[in-house]
Length: 413
Image (tube, rainbow, N blue to C red; front, side):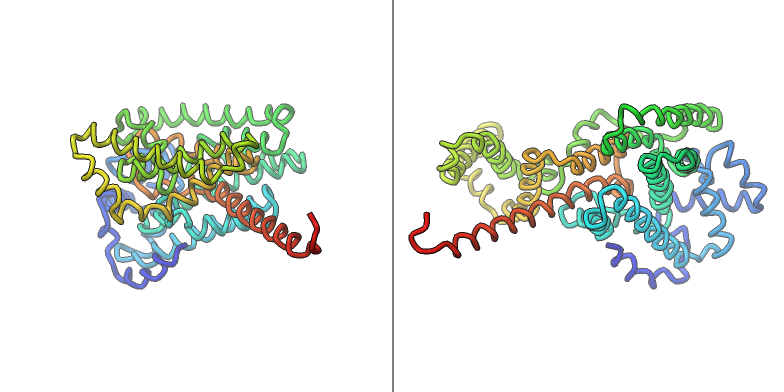
């Protein structure tokens, strides 16, 4: 998943750190104004080490400052090398957490799908977008701290050792000093209790995390003399919620690029879920699906022609162009996974979906750039891992049925 940044790494030799965007200049200004270590202590009770955009992130500030002191202004190569090493560390932590949570096979598969940035191939969330610029190392450090926190709490749930709870609480404080998204950790801990079927009796142990989050929030208000920097937002958060999280061709459907085809397949999937419960309809499943899909397609074409004023024949021509149908390889797996998800109601998949949405929640307040999906994409990797396992399970059952049919003696019914 990191092969692109790794291949491009040699190109960073002797490159100025400020050669990327405005944020990199803001970091440089703060480094130059705080040449001594004692100067960096103010970042623990004030805005972080980046001018003009106040956040409370003392740990990334100190780490970036240390890198600058070691590598200098032309240290783009070592800065990006540290970025990739941090990503590798995050991958190891995530893998160990997922193995404890899901088991060795399932956890390893989910970690591999996340590390391989499989979502990138479906025009979806993927960690690869957090590996293109050294300043996005905050995402990797946040992933390490956040995962260490919930991993320690998971160990507490499994061992009932209070030492793990105290370790999780300390790591939660560390995560809060890395990035604001860590404020969602208490909700993820409740989700962990639900997943481990210990929510009623162990949920009360999450209360100290909510208390620490509240205390740190008020301390942050004091340190920043307000809420700090916030990207300008708008009322489109509902649109972004679906656009960012449905994945594949559904994203294009929401954007209007392939609306007719996407809606046709999606409604066909809903029809399949409805009629599969009735034995009489199941016998004619393929024919009914085809007729239903064709009817919906024709209705949508007429509706599109009516709303846009474009003649019906031109609407049909646009619908049939190759670029519209090229979305099928993206849409079909997502469509199949979503249908099977609603049918199976797999507990691990539900955990993945809720994890992704909880971690994503703070991102609805402003416009999103791809690097901030680094950690939310983990939840969808878990969801997709069980979708892949379900496909293999269906294939094995189909193969087993075929073998039984072939081995039946002549005349057997």
